[in-house]
Length: 231
Image 1 (cartoon, rainbow, N blue to C red):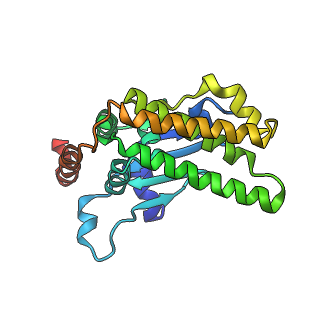
Image 2 (cartoon, rainbow, N blue to C red):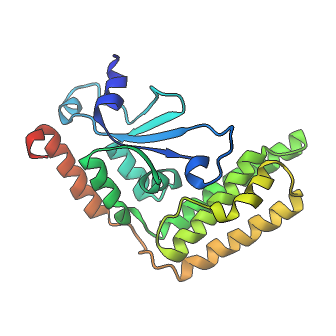
């Protein structure tokens, strides 16, 4: 087995299913999108060649982050990382993985407004460009930008990440099938953007994540990797 695969196979602490299956939007044709977190042995950081910050595979549609990179991205309120921490579809979890999931509130902050809004706007701009060039956007991508806005608004309003948007399933899947007029899709997107903006002012989330708490945990992970009997 190649060393790159060994990091995922032997050192993964958390592996979950994300995407449509976690969002309550799966269809018979939906892929199984797997995302994970692995802990590279501390000794490997002493070498000139450092462990990779992320890896594809070895399974199809599988992507994993080394724990330090994962924590840095999650602290920035990256939606993809927050969804890993809150996916209900957990395929593998070790004691360290459970600790990471329990640490999830420390990653949450009002930074989510900026990241969710920026991601959604970027996807919307691409959809508009595709529509101008090809006559219609990639409707699956449009569905997910709307789903992202729903999730972001609910996060800011409630202070918790809710991956399942099943209550919007029928309408979102209608978007995916291209059944809603573009004008109606844009109007829905505008309403969700306004909701996201309005949620910021009254959000129960702190202004900044608890970086010190996350860093303390990360240091403990590195130490326990050196002395696994104490972990």
